Length: 235
Length: 296
Image (tube, rainbow over all chains, first blue to last red; front, top):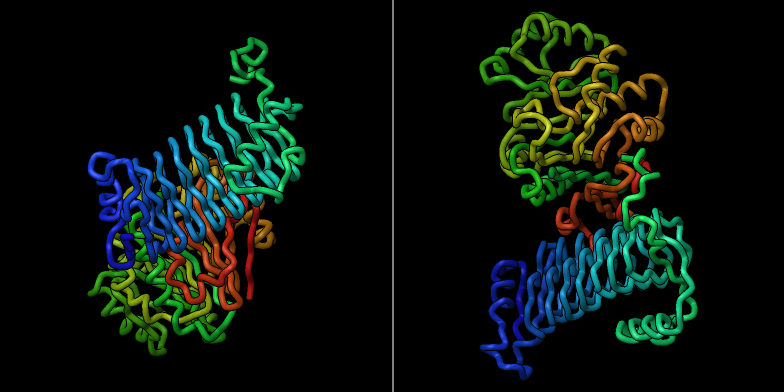
């Protein structure tokens, strides 16, 4: 199991080593090099960004911007807080933050699962495109702005302007929502949608802490999809 | 981009380390602002005196002490630090000294003034700027620093932050203001003067004007939400206080750490990582359009 100390080696070296992990030189079976431990991250940026291999990276402390950005297949666990844009543009795999996450967590994520065990701040899930995001605490203002697909599941509450200009993502919030953004409305979930939520909660390891029927669903009213002549004055 | 750091001590035990901690924080923020840096340190002040932080070339500064003693018949209490010097003057002479400097020493630039505040800024990498002024050995109760990546005006010492437009008041800014020309015109009508074309100086001037009109620091910052258009995270220092405010969409990053001993501000967590007991601190991001004030 490689141990990387970021007090003595650079993030660039760490990421280069992680990027060198390819199915070609490792085969598909798990070897020792699929478990990495990173110590003294010190809030540095872009730690474990660009993974494209089913390795598990345990980071022992707080990380800076874009941790596990663009992640594909990898599993990244942050034992601390995460800065702006954790798991931004994730394609697949799983990212788990044990502490709080700063703004734009999971931004533009296409797939995979992001679990934040603490709170997430502003713009959580902005422009999400299929990622599933589960936040055990609360999320900040302007979350899921222009969200396109995927599930944002929040066990706590949401800040102002949730889901502004949303396309088709599902926003599940258990606690209070300060306000909804333009074109975001509460919706009655179908049985199928509840089952989807149950699946996401199960994958996030949330069993017993929250039941699917406790969440309210918010989504798009679909009135902003096309230009409407009555809105011409607003441009 | 720009980086901001701030450290407000609640426990005097840390006072001897104020400069050293601020220097480390500033150094980490180099990547956010490598072109210039500056900082204000609130140290000790003697009752009945005001500290004038001046910038002058070496020759002018060397002659200043003698000229001052000759003109005012008291010895000059002058401390040189790099390209700056701090001149301590009795309250009753302050206005006279200011006019004298302006009239007789046009090569000397008044950077800031305060009962306790000293203000240093220069172009160059933040670590180098801090070293030039000896920030690591400065002591005090609170300090604010800035690393600049210029966007709205040129890379000059005058364009570096913090900006001070009033006694013991200083402001650092991360962001850009879009209506600063109009606000500057309005403030000039109100009698304020500006040294640069910089947008952040206008923000500092706006707060000075509001407080001159009787507003508290908190009220002045609240008023600025309507008056200033653009992106901003502000950190403001006063003789006894420290305030933080972000614009209504929290465009620019900010993170704070609070322990029993201090409140610290950083544009990024990295800038706080070396602070004592940081792992036990309460970490939080200031909410958009909310004014946070700490005072001694």
